[in-house]
Image (cartoon, rainbow, N blue to C red; front, side, top):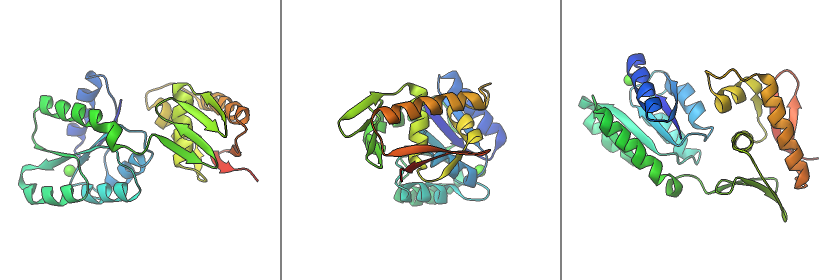
Length: 225
Ligand code: CA
């Protein structure tokens, strides 16, 4: 379970991260709306905690853009006590739940658990498709025509990220950060190894898409020909 915390008060953000990690979640933190939205759009998170007042892009705009992009990750908004009127605005824009600061850690964790449980109905359909290739989230399989192959967790996460960012160049560093996390000692060649596994599996199912290497930068998933 991966949670994204978008909160500019650094102490509160760190407290939330600790709380989530102590409860067994993986938690990433962003301190402004713009980078928070970028991360949220990767679609790798199960729940997002989103503050309302944020530098660069406020929480409501982050939420609106996320929903406009077709991302249905459950969002828990964190609002200051004085912002009750804002609640209505946020609900209209597709927030799933609110907590007013300061909140009880137990209540926060209960909300996160509840949202995570609702995830299957709320999130995007169970599969992603690109160029005739289908990535199935419930069975961890990649298929094309009548052929299919099972993916390991890491292969699946990388493949999902590539499919969500189809035709865009994904930098190696961002793959490392998003898949292995900030505190991991994984290196570029870990990424290369998994990309080569994925290429073999794509070839195995006769996929008409390929992972192109962009020298010195990263990778791009695109259709053949
Ligand atoms: Ca704030």
